[in-house]
Amino acid sequence: MSTPQPQTHQQAAPAPNWQQAPGTSYTSPIPIVRTHLGHALASEWTKIKSVRSTVWTLGVFLLLVVGIGLLVAANTSDNDYGDVPYTIPAFFGLILGQICLITLGVLVVSSEYGTGMIRTTFTASPQRHRVLTAKLLIFFAVAFVVSALAIGFVGLITSGLHSGASDTAWGGTVLKGALYVSLLGVLALAVGSMLRHSAGAITAMLGLVLVPAILPAFLMISDSMRTLGEKMMDYAAPNALAKIFELDTDNGTGGPQLLLLVCVTAAAIAGAYTLLERRDV
Image 1 (cartoon, rainbow, N blue to C red):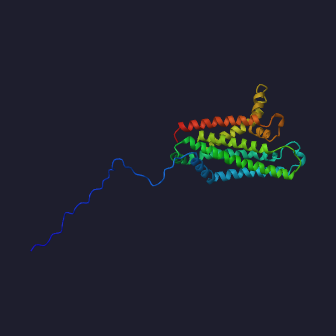
Image 2 (image 1 turned 30 degrees about the horizontal axis):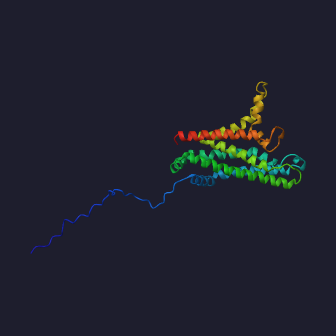
């Protein structure tokens, strides 16, 4: 009698067919949405409101504009507002506060190059021009709203302290003053995009703002350079703000100075777009 032997050869399982049948492909359950500028705007808004540099720079900006403005308003009398608007005290705060917006404008773009985050940004949104456009729009909106609120608040408080002292309309100074310092910040953003270095871009912008205000004092020593010095001083940022706030109404209300800043900012933005598409990250 023989003992039954276990079956040594089991039937092999059929090999999986790894090859896809012709005409079939994998379909992801995640819906694919075509991206547009709105997504880039939402992304940049999330960035700018979540970083500490925004809180610090805008906080110091408000402290300077509102704090110095209210201090000046409290130490002036009704006679000081005979032919000037109530927003004059905000001008003194903006002289220093514009540096905060310049710094924030540079950091909005250069900080991503410093940390390497820009590679992730361009991987998520390969359309680089769309990313830069979103940064420009979001920053300008934030800077303009914050500046207008700060200048308008100082104007309201000053009008309450010195009610009836001035008949000069001051609504235009709020918009033009906020537009001027916001454009300075946008110019700084464009310079930061071209230089890709925070310290270098901030230094370049400070030179652009301070040199035209200091150099004319030396140029006007020479008679041959006096005309150039006077023109440079006329279009320097502090003098431009003084004209916008109607401290010097004999030479206009800052329209040519504002137009020059618009042209310079547009040229810098064009340069930033061009270099952004040509250079690697």
